[in-house]
Image (cartoon, rainbow, N blue to C red):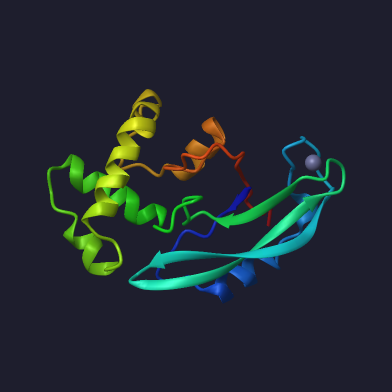
Length: 171
Ligand SMILES: [Zn+2]
């Protein structure tokens, strides 16, 4: 997958996503095979997100590399791959937990998230991410998406090890 910089949950919609994605030139993105110039738009799929209390269905665009044949989903950076809960909410829950505070501010703005999600997020962080973040000298107060993608080829809090790279438009 290729992560594109759409960070803000407040203004996020299918239109925001489409406007960004279809303003891109996929041939300028780099494929996992290391080559540029081979990616073209290729198919879509639907996934579900819990954003600001809404259950949002998002149609995700894929690209395909004409050199190696692999396809990659174009994932906005506010998403944690394979999770319905935005990166921002997950990070906020973790931060509040480390400070010994309640996650109520996150539950209040995104009421589809509950205590069991919270426990799951904290468990995954401790098992997989905490050491990685500390070893980079970073904390939950930092902006983690770019650095996790560049060092680990994973979005922050992504567990499933599907290759993930960051694309920022050269404009
Ligand atoms: Zn390729």
